[in-house]
Image (tube, rainbow, N blue to C red; front, side, top):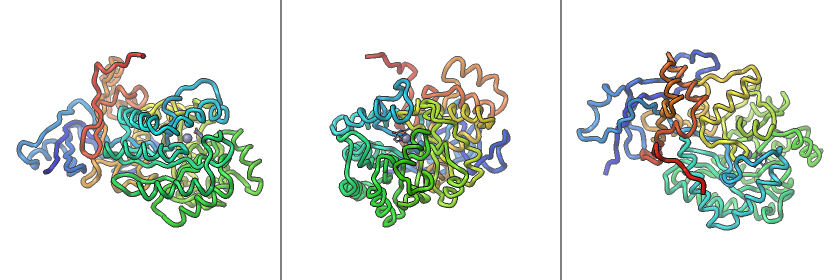
Length: 444
Ligand code: GUN
Ligand code: ZN
């Protein structure tokens, strides 16, 4: 039986990078004030003006009326830790203390499968509440933490990337694996999940300080054998971390060289942060197609530094945009954009709404090599979308009303919006989140 619907509302989708100027590059986006997206069997069948499309749909097709709202592709988060959901907003530490004081204790709890399953469900609820339909997710070193998030994502028909943390030193005993055991577990998880449904596996060495050379080498070996696998890790986030890496790997000329030496830098690699990279490291990254996940709310929260998005991009490095929760302070893509704007403002590089929304959608899809299936509202693409309310609060309604152009309205949404602005989220052509105005949450 055909599962089909027509969503009617304003529609915005990017076809290319709109550039950095206040006026988007020609042909970089399409916008329909009274548009429609025809969903069929989990995919997009057509996108057009409502009046153009309506005569072509079968009589009696369900029409979901989102007039007054804005339909965009579902947001994508290139780097997030689901195991850190419950320690988001933990006070007053910088990276290495924050890991020891909050992160590792929270991750220890994932030895218990029931805990992992419960957090995985709540994490996906929160992602969808914030309009994010795809994420690249750090789990913990427990293989069950990966089974839990993949099972939960499969049940909701989400496109999701995830992997087991590999970490054989410098962490609590309860979280440590071994070079051989960590790879054996990863290979089992790859066999069970990679390429199944909408799921993909991302090899996950946490960062250089928590892996031995043997472990990094073994990860490189797995990657060399399968070009479809992803890799996610951290790079050059915090000054103290850089000094530690230099001490642990004296044979390497810089931080990136540690990963290069073990064959871990390629087009499907995502390195979170990259704040303190040298020009030389940027030039080497650019040659590989690896992407740097700019994680602004995390960088501001931990005081790690200001990521120079423009210098990184001008060096030819692929960048993506990420929440990095639990150091990040919000899972909603709009919150991430606010942080990105603020970091840019401090560097004299203000982020336009065009560039911001491009990054959250098609830009991130491209960085993750998923632009053939997500990130755009386009016939044949998977039907993951977000329906945004630009008047979710009295103040936002006022601001939107006085805005004279679409660019101004989008900018106000980017700066003032949060999960209250996400009216609905759809994945694989089905509703997976619907905001209820009375949906307030009392403290326990
Ligand atoms: N570096 C190594 N592990 C982590 C982590 O969990 N979060 C952040 N922000 N940086 C890291
Ligand atoms: Zn991270």
